[in-house]
Length: 268
Image (cartoon, rainbow, N blue to C red):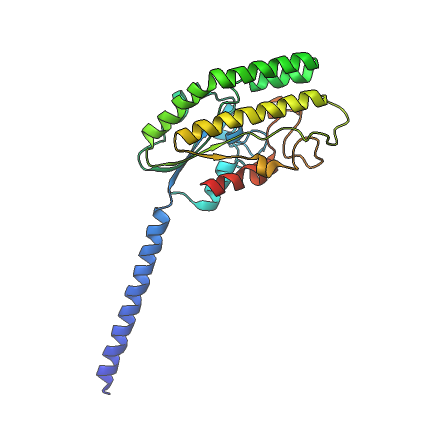
């Protein structure tokens, strides 16, 4: 073979290899850009209150870099990440303050909301500082609200999400049971109170799951991962009464990474 022929053949091979590599690079870039835009909505359980590592610009919303939305975004590099979940948020707050980032191009949405509407903070304050009967009465009021009023409020939120981001996969996250019954707590709330509070958590989760299913959304049951890590378990992923007080009865950093993140990642 002549040298010129050999050189031409080698050049053609090199050019083909470059083209193949360039094509692979373009395909990989396309795969990266197709990672869905992600919007994280909701209340303090989605913001990450209790986990620490709060993002300064989030102010009183106390969004945490250790929250499950931030952890998922860091691990998966979505096309964009909008984090509007906020401490204390109710369904009305989600509707009025959190939905702006949603768009037809949004591919993934997470949300936990409803606990504050049902009077989460007041119920826990009553149970901590009042009698068994007062606690059980307050829990019963919350359950009545969850049955009668909350479903319509959830429908309004879920319908608004669907309207603004019709192609998105929406994952509704529930709330964990707070207490291990018969666990290692020798002081604090009575067993009657703990059972009632756990029952209320199961009750709201059942409503959340039903409303989510009716809107075609996924529901993430975090009791599957928090089992064995409730308050009184000896390895709690939830704060009991603590300072600052707004972190009481919220997941720790371990609760976000070990309790919420795997459930969300599986459903996403």
